[in-house]
Image (cartoon, rainbow, N blue to C red; front, side, top):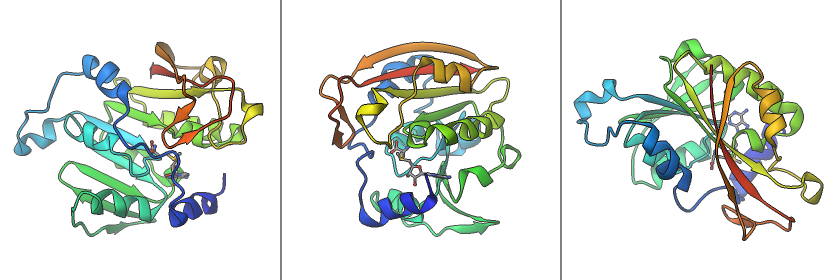
Amino acid sequence: MKESFWHACWERNSLGFHQKSIHPFLSQYLSPLISDNRFKQENQKEQLPTVFVPLCGKTDDMVWLAERFNVVGAELSDIACRDFFIEKDIVTSPKAIGDFKRYTHQNIELWQGDFFGLKASQFQKFDWIYDRAAIIALPKAMQQRYAEHLTTFIDDKTKLFLISLEFPQEELEGPPFAIVDKDVRRLFSNFKIECIAEHDLEDKTFAQRTFNVSYLKEKLFIISK
Ligand SMILES: C[S@@+](CC[C@H](N)C(=O)[O-])C[C@H]1O[C@@H](n2cnc3c(N)ncnc32)[C@H](O)[C@@H]1O
């Protein structure tokens, strides 16, 4: 998938992947796995655990995450980063850092630029990585490259919260691009993989799009070293 494809989506506001609400897996499955930091004060920001959100778009899942974590997002589109804050009436001016622009507000920072140009050494170790509609946004050939780069952000204590999407790929021209269990095992072959949930999307609706496919399901994998 070329960068121009995604820039065009954002310019045309063609955002079928963008959810109108928070992904239910967060409260259902992430909450029980973390201690609740919601009541920590602003001056305890540095004590919050950290979450990395690659290919974050302008997802409001980051709002839910920011109540519990310091959030670092990576996103190609400047429109996405800008709109994430504008839609919350937050005024923030980005700072240029190398090839990136960094937008920050309180405990959220969005790095606008190419995810593949970010280095794990630029950040403190992440406790969690949240992938919703990131790996599945990429065609098979790029999923391998993405997984290789993503795993450089996985430290001994990092857990990757990966939401996959399964459907018969021949019934739909991507994106999204399906990944099934054997893809997850291949892409993260040196890692511990647990599948902790499986939900059929019976109405075949994925965010703002309804697909004409015979089945559509999301699975949740927790991946760690
Ligand atoms: C399917 S959308 C999902 C966005 C978000 N995860 C969500 O749940 O709404 C994929 C996003 O990846 C971004 N993207 C694609 N390639 C990228 C890259 N190389 N670096 C950073 N972001 C990228 C696109 O601009 C788009 O916003």
